[in-house]
Length: 428
Ligand SMILES: Cc1cc2nc3c(=O)[nH]c(=O)nc-3n(C[C@H](O)[C@H](O)[C@H](O)COP(=O)(O)O)c2cc1C
Image 1: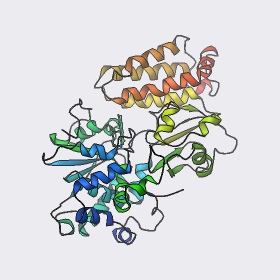
Image 2: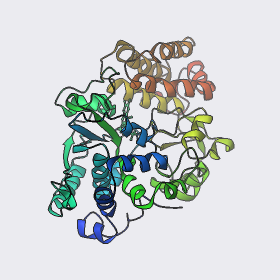
Image 3: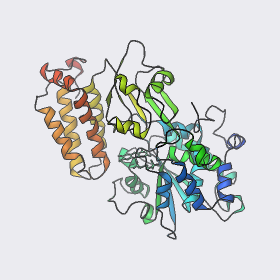
């Protein structure tokens, strides 16, 4: 398997500037600033086909091209909030190789003529904030951040800003509110952040993994990047694998690799005695799929999972074994979204706790036959009606679990209890 982002991950002390530079680090930044115009950087990223790794897979170069010319200052805001259940790839990218991110951030800031970039990091990632702060200090001291970089007129500052642990602040406009010191609420769009973002100025928002790719693209070119992955999903992707597998963790794969390779060869398969019942490919917001032979062969790509009726999203694979209760797994997911709903809009604020309450009732043996159409009806009233995608996210696994595991819901209702858990383990 090819490695781009994890290529140097095992090099001792790669988090330290001299080691990073010895391994070719900051040559992409030097090349961009001394040999390329900002538009050329945007063009090569556009030609590479790099798409956003934060979940929505929006083409990165195209997003940068939306920044209006001549409206200054512009900003770059890096989404390091990573709060979705199942996702832990950005954490490892920042923890193991922080300069790779900083270099990508500096090049991307140059491309959109931003002199200031913010890295908005998840509240719980205190120790990673410390790693990033140390790397930023080294980069300033080494002349890779600050004013007149490489003797040019370009100046770039990076500010690390730690959130307070709210999933909604991963939504890009809520992230900007939080960055500005307000409570994180999603903003009405349009205007989109590229036109009116941080402090009312044009702002590009990108995910950590997205930006970590940028120095490699600038160094090696668009065709090189396209030589990895599929035509529609060029490059590699870091996949997080969690659940009862032999080697849970993050794995970099060429896009298009079958899921079977990730699960069996890389993550070592399920632990002894367990079989795959279902899996969620893109974090808690992506619909689960049953663990059929056909679903083992799905290519790890945006188009692969879209065709299978799910979403590749942030490539956060949650493995559900045959001895796990789907309803209890769903309850965990529903409780998460109910807890994290920001309360700004009614469908999500009222609907998500109602979903959790109904699933809890079924899991605890107090479900009624009408609860299944009721769940679908609540989903119908959230989907497309919430202010931001968090509401939609809360519905996707309810719909998928009822579609694929209807019998298991019925069994809970008819037997008045969970076949996997005793009444004593009821969920309050
Ligand atoms: C509720 C919610 C949470 C999100 N959380 C994250 C997150 O933690 N990290 C992230 O990069 N994108 C997250 N996103 C997506 C961002 O809004 C945005 O699309 C992304 O940061 C853009 O970067 P990209 O184009 O590089 O993927 C979230 C979206 C929603 C609706």
